[in-house]
Every structure is written in C-alpha cells, then in structure tokens.
Amino acid sequence: MKLSMIDYGIIAVYFVFVLGIGFLLKRRVKSSGDFLMSGKSIPLWITSLAFISANLGAQEVIGMAASGAKYGIMTAHFYWVGAIPAMIFLGVFMMPFYYGSRARSVPEYLKLRFDEKTRSFNALSFAAMTVFSSGVSLYALAILLQSLLGWSFEVSVWLSGGIVLAYILTGGLTSAIYNEVLQFFLIVLGIAPLVFAGLHQVGGWSGIEQQLPAVMTHTWQNMGSAADNPMGVNMFQMVMGLGFVLSFGYWCTDFLVVQRAMVAHNMSAAQRTPIVAAVPKMLIPFIVILPGLIALVLTKTDGSFALPLKPDGRMDFDMTLPVMLSHYYPTGLLGIGLTALMASFMSGMAGNVTAFNAVWTYDIYQTHFKKNAPDKHYLWVGRMATLFGILLSVATAYLARSFNNIMDLLQLVFGFVNAPLFATFLLGMFWRRTTGHGAFWGLLSGTVMAAITQGITIAEGKGGWMLSTPVHEFSSAMAQAFAIAIVAWTSCFVITILISLATKAKPADELRGLVYSLTEKPKETGVAWYLRPAPLAGAVLAAVIALNFVLR
Amino acid sequence: MQKYLDDLRFIIGALFMIFALILMVLGITEPVVPGKLNLNLYTGLFMGLFSGGMLFFSIRDQLKAEESSKKKDVSVAL
Image (tube, rainbow over all chains, first blue to last red; front, side, top):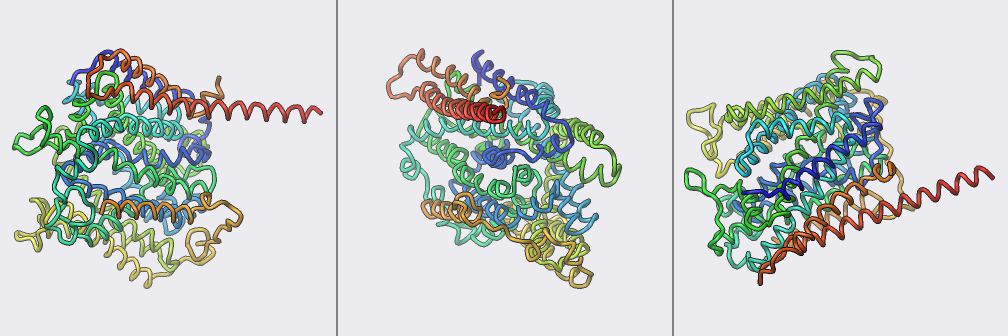
C-alpha cells in the first residue's frame, strides 16, 4: 500500500486535532477528580458514544472483519447476543448502584459492598489486564503499520504511545473521552464508504446471499448443532456462554466501559448511557462485519481481488480490512481509512490507560500506600500512573514481539479471572445475604475452576495440559472458551452462596444504596418515555430482537 | 472563540469539514470512469453534510447561550 502526500496530510491533520483537544482541556484539570473522573460533568451523547468507542479498538475493527470472512454474519452474535442485552441490564439494574453508591471505580464498589480483599483482588487483576490489553493494541498497530506502510516497529510504538500519553496527560479522562467520540465518527465515516462501494459491486445483500453458502448469511438457522456452523458452537453455548457469562461479565463489570457511564452528569444520564450506546452498537456489525463477507464474494467473483494467504496456505483473514481499503480507496479516502484504523488502536489504548490510572490511584495507591494526602498529590499520582501505564504498554508491545506464546498465556490467565466476576456482582447487588468472604472465595474458586476446565479439555490443539488424555474435545476453541466461562461462573455462584450462608452478613444499614432490596427506586412520573431508562431499554431490546429475526 | 473550542460538536464539525473539503476537491478533479463510483466525491459530500450539521447546532446553541446570558445581565442591572 502506498500513501501519497495528501494521505499523510490527512493523518497529520487528525493528530493535530487529537493533541489540540488535550491542550484545550488542560485548563479544566484542577483536581484528581477532574483528571481521573472528568469531574462527573459529561453530557449523555458524549458518554454514550465514548462507552462503545472505548471498546471499538483494533481487535474489534480488524478482528470483526476477519471473523465476518471466517464465520459469516453469525459474527453479529458478538453484538446482538453478546453485548446489547448486557448493556441494557447494566443501564436499568446495575448503574443505580455504581452511580448511587458514589464509588469512583468498580473495585471501590466491591470495597463498599464487600471488603478490602475483594476490592484488592479485582483492582490488581484489572490493572494488570488493562496494561496488557493496551500493550497488545500497541503491538497490533505497530505490526499493521509495518506490514502496510513499511514503518519501523520502534517508530510506530513510540509515536503512538507518545500521542496517547500527550493527550491524556494534558486533558485527563475528559480528553480521552472526547477523543474516543472523535475516533468513533472517524471509524464510522472512514469505513462506511467501503461497505457502500463493496455492496454496490457485489449486488447488495441479495448478491452476497447468492454467492455464499446459507450458513454464512444466517445468524440462528445453523445453531442446532455445533457441527453445523463454522463457529463450532451450539445454541446453548452461544446464549449461556457468550450471551450471559462472558457478555455480562465484560459489559457490566469491566471498569473500562463502566467508567464512561460513571462520569455522566446525573443518575438518569448514567443509566441511559449504555442504553443509548446500544443503538449505534447494534448497527456497528454492518460496518465491521460486512466487509468480511464482501471480501469473500470478491475473492470468488473478482479476479483482481484476493485475500492474502498465510505461509501454511490458509487465508489470512486478519488482513481483510486493510486489503479491502487498499482495493477500493483512492488517494484521500485511503488516508481517512488508515487514520480510522490508527484511531481504533489508539482509542482502545487510551481507554485502557485511563481506566488503569484511576484504579491505580484510587484503589491501589490511596488504599495501600498513602491514605490521607492532599488532592494535589493524587492528581500527581494519577499523572504518573498515566506515564507508567504507557511505558508498561510499550514494554508489553516489545514483549509481545519477542514471546508471542507468553502473550497467549497471559490472555488465558486474565480470561480465567474475568469469567466468574459477573456472579459476584449479581449476588452482591441482588442478594443482601452475600458476604465479603463469600465473594472473595467465590471469585478465587471460579478462577481455579476455569483453569482446571481448560487443563482437562482440548480444542484445536489448545488446553489439556493437566491430563495425558483430555476428558473432552471441543469442536472449536470458541466453544471451549464459552464452556470455561460457564463452569467458572457457576462455581463462583455456588461457592459464594455456600460461604455467604456460613459467614456473617453486613448489617442492613451498611448496605443501603448498594443492594437492590435496600435501595430506594427513583420515581419518574411525568417524564417522557425516552428519558426513562426502562421504557427506552424496552424499545432497544425490541429493535435488537427484530434484527435477530430478520437475519435469523 | 474559546467557547466554541470548548464544544466538542464544533471540534468534530471543524475536523470533518476539512476532510470533506479535501475529498470533494479530489473527487471533482478525478477523471470520470464509467461504472465506477467516485468515492472521494460522495464521501466528501456526506461528510460535508455531517460536519455542517455539527457546526450549525454548535454555533446555534452558543449564540442562544450568549443571548440568554445577556438577558440575565440586563435583568440583574434593572
């Protein structure tokens, strides 16, 4: 791929704006609350777009196009089953506790609801996970720029890390959120023309249906048995594993996304943030998944287009989006498309770093190192945590380049920690008898059970390290991941209940505002339906059910 | 000017207006190829509409806010 001066000019203009936002917001940052929590003053439309944009990182934009080519429109399950219901649940049922408890972070809610050890377990694992994810994003960006434009790995890593550092260090979380919104529009407007041009060439959706097998153009019809679809998962694994455990575990408890709703200017806006965000979220598959399907049709019908092959002769699906950009985009639009890709990497990285610096400052440093320092000190610590987070991300990117297997292992371990988390929150918020000991040991047991399940089963050559003959072989690594999540969640749920029943619960007075049965429900009479979380959630849910039905 | 720069809609509108102008100029100067979409021109036009909308709402709201603050000042003086 060769860029012209105009394309480079477009990329430069974008970075001037990105850095400019940081400098414009600098004067607003006067306290640690301004830097780490945006002073809780961000309007709804911004928090909603930032909510999905924090997740619209590189893995999503490039990965979903790759999955679209590999699995077809079934990939949309990651949105319509694996995101929207959880986002609605977060808005309607969980935000009142996060926002109403005045916790500054998700781990701090765990401290208020349970105890210090549960908070510390979550804070430490989350901090490590965010730095790791940010580093992986940086690594992926550097590899992409190296293969597409011939940029050196070092230049890509340090330049991207430096830009993200500059705009977070100056404008704090507000700057990261503003840039996420900018990046959202850039990703949508930069990639949508590709879908438009592709559909125009292949004859629209009906053209895709004619050229590809039915299993690639239906979401539910081939889910009766795992053997009938390219994902290798059945309906139960999809709904329970992805749609319930993994999805709710991520969207309802991951501070990276929840933080965007927690900085809304009032409770109603905080509740509506994930629900409003669900509207563009349910349409994103049409931008990120369709290019994969179009690429498959073009490979079949257009002699001038082919997906690149890996050294082993299989198609390199990860290159779907970059190859499509270079196939369709002329000078000018190519610069915008590439900027959109770079923006998606930086958006993911900035989201992780801003979540890391808040958790490090409030849940680790203030709790374990220096409790009652002046606010200026915590502002300084927040800034240092940002610098430290970026440097660790750069180090992780270098580590990923040298030891890819270590990265796979780390990803697996973090998956084990994350899988049971939603059971802890569900019980903590809706069953007042849940105790701190129950929550902590439940989380630990869920993590251990996840590791054991992975160790005694095998899929696509992965897992099975505990036994010479694994007890079960899954049809795909995805099916194994869903099964691990279900086992981890269930064991956390059961162990938390058993230990809670055997230990002393907190008195009711200490749980007000933290548990459903002890929290006053807000009265919303005389407010338009679209301003109330529950009716709005109902409308969004109906829309997503309709989408599933149309493409069933 | 500072109040406009504080509004994210204005910043988004300005950035995409620059992109739209670049794409439209490139699209207009591109040779016409029968049967091939002029992606630069169409995307530039769409971005122009989007950024125009963003700028319009941002400027309208800033002017409204200015007017209401002027009215407040007058009523306080009275």
